[in-house]
Length: 295
Image (cartoon, rainbow, N blue to C red; front, side):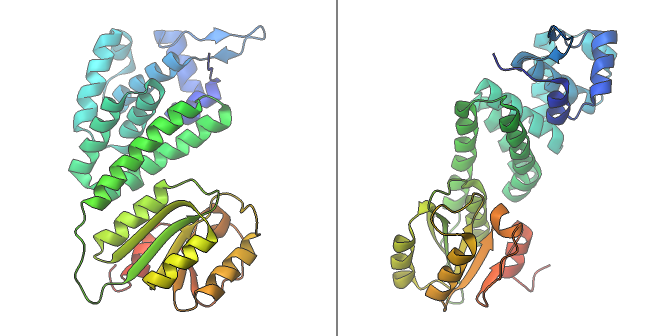
């Protein structure tokens, strides 16, 4: 069974370890197991309960009142808050619960509530990205399994794909042509899909090639499509070429296109950037590249 330390719970819930100890001692909020050396170990059920308690506490419930609620009453109160709240911490906690329980319905309600209130763009930036940061923590601590991560990632992908498909194809003769892809062995697609949505919502033309595209295939598509911009994200080390060689080859091969580069490996490197390349750190910088005259 997966287990969490008190520090894990602090990072995932935002509840300080000191506060959590007080809640345990005074209100019996959690009853962790302990090792032979008296170290607290928490289960998935403990994490779920703490996230629910945190949601209620952050939305005006006193901890003394929460302690007197049954599990059913806590769950009902959390669901009511989730349906109406767009507070990002509440929705991030809800998504963590949905992931650990493989609860698609809870996920859909949380995402739909936010999209309805603040739109897809803010939902991705203020809820989904912080949630994925916490998923990364859970990976590092070994407290989620691949099935849970794939389950939630695919649900997010589905939402983005539907949103992209919902954008009308533009007939604007001044629209720019964008081509988006990920290099071979690169599978982290959510940010690329989000950028595809932003590009299409900005009334530009788009070809989306997706994950792990061989360089030879990319070349053939570029030859036919003649994009104004080629955008890619690199988050894992490239397998065959080192990063500088790959970027140099990309820019030299497609001199008529502006190559847009992002991702951890790009942003945190000391690359020499060719003249026809631009590094962007986030979606806001990409939006400025697309529409430089819009604040």
